[in-house]
Length: 134
Image 1 (cartoon, one colour):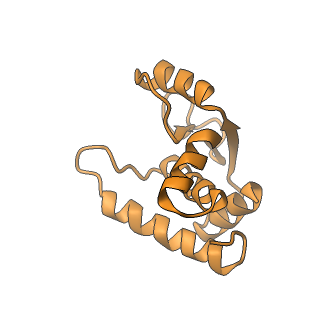
Image 2: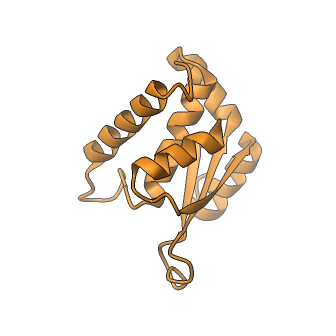
């Protein structure tokens, strides 16, 4: 399911040849990553590590980067929002992938609304294709 969501999303966004790594991890592992890279001492739902930034960004233009999702946090969030684990996992994957593609809802001057709109559009398309059941 995760692979299918990623493939469909890349196709819809016009980058069918792009590559990314997706990891589903525990709260413990994502807390360590969150601390190491963002100096935040807590678990989070998703982290994205874009390869299109920094000194070596031009080595492989098809390599988008890594998306790391805490399965434990995704499960808690799904329960609290009253929808399926699969839907939450899909949303977090879409969110992480959009970050890899340059969307940013936290940076000053960013268009957080554009990112949220894109997330909703992609999630609706994934549901319409029957990849996940809401």
